[in-house]
Structure formats: structure tokens, C-alpha cells
Image (cartoon, rainbow over the protein chains, first blue to last red):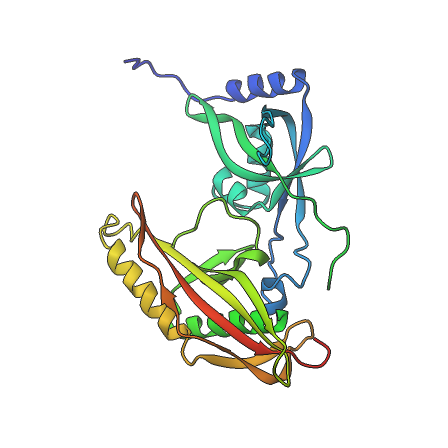
Length: 148
Length: 161
């Protein structure tokens, strides 16, 4: 067992950010509800627009993880996001953790496409998250007009 | 039928707030009674615990009556893993408590039909009414217990619907 004392620092995050930027780094936009939610009946029934906030997350790497081999099988995608970018948004929204941010997210926009978050995990260095890995599924096409 | 579905949900939500005010959930930054319409919220990967989830299923229309009668099946799904305080060992009791709350929410078996596209919601001329629930056997997935109650909801179509 390694019992040596090593103070946590930001080196892991810096390395992760550098890797994400240099390996075809892109930007993603997380869709989250506004801080003051819509508490009306219409807001809970899908009548009012949810007025989602768009939170930019960069650097990030987006890639397909599963080819569509069978009819009806949905392609899966993976989004690697810098932990420093996630922490910045967590602080801005005054949340307790990145989990709270991903739980409340209504989706992620990458390259103009909407994706739903299936699961997420983090990679850590010295106990600090340096990278978040989101498993994504492409959202079904949505109508451009609202019924209400 | 949309007004009937909306009225059914709001009736159950308001009744739950009275039956068990402590059963709340924060959804999209709003704390509210722990019940939601699945199709009106962001997609969920897993069935969340301690919340009633309404899922609308089969719909039929009866044209043989003076007014058009629509009927829709509503599945109300709920799950629990018990409480942290009891290390989840009270999950059976917690599910029974949710069964009890659901039966109380569904009684009486009717509510006024409202149109929520207007503010305030407009009172319509007919009622929405429903059958007694059919409770499925408990499903066990590791430490999660879940159940689905099925209710058939009826409503007459009114002018302009």
C-alpha cells in the first residue's frame, strides 16, 4: 500500500484539459432548468416552455462508442468533459456536486445535435476529478413548432 | 383527451399534497408533490424511487354515445428502496405506504375537467372519472421494490376539444 503523503493539486485537471484540447477538442452545451423553476400547473404539464439554460462546457471530446450493427439499435456516444469546466458550472449554479448538475440536465447539445445522458462517471487524480465521462444517446428528432 | 389527462394528474398531485405533505421531490428546480407525468418531464434512464410516475398507454374512443367518450389507460409506476435510516430494511413497509397513498389519491374516482392552456385554468362542463386501480405484483430488482397500478380514465369530449 502506498502511504506516502501527496497533497491534492490541479495537475491532473491541467493534464486532462491539455489532452482534451489537443485530441480534437470541441465544446458541448448542457441544458439545465433555470434557477427559478416554473412551479405552475402549465409548467408541469408540458404546456410552458421550460426556458432551459445553456451551459457551455469545454474542452470536451465527443465520439461514437457503438456502431449501429442491427436495425433498431441506437448508436451510443461518449462525451469526455474537462472537470474544471464542470466545476465552474457547479459553482455558478451553487450546486453541491457534479452529480447534481448531471441529474438536473435535460440533455446535451454537441455539434447542433441533442443527446440524452444515460450515465456518467469521473476519473480522479489524487482524489480530485480531472475528467467526466458521459454516456449519451441521440435524442429522437423533435418538432420545430410547439403545439401550445 | 389532453384536458382529461391534465386534470387527472393535477387532481392526484393536489390530493397527494394533502395526504402526505412530506412526500415531495425537486424537479427542474421546483419542489412539488412527488408525482409526475412521464411524458412531460425529461427522459429518465431508471425508475426513480419514492415518486409516482404516470404513464399514458392505450386510448380508445366510443362514438356510439350522444357525446364522444374517450378512455385511456394510465399506468402509475412507483418504486422504493426504503430509508437510509433503516438501511433499506423498511422497503416493504415503504412500498405499502405508497400503495396506501395511491389508493387515497385515487378516491373519489372523479374530478372536474379543467383546461390548463388558459391561466387560470378554465373549468369545463364535464367530469373526468376513472376505475379502481389494479395493482401489479411487486417487482424486485436487487434492493428496489416497484409496482405498477393501472387505472382506466374516462372523459367526454366537449365542444372545441
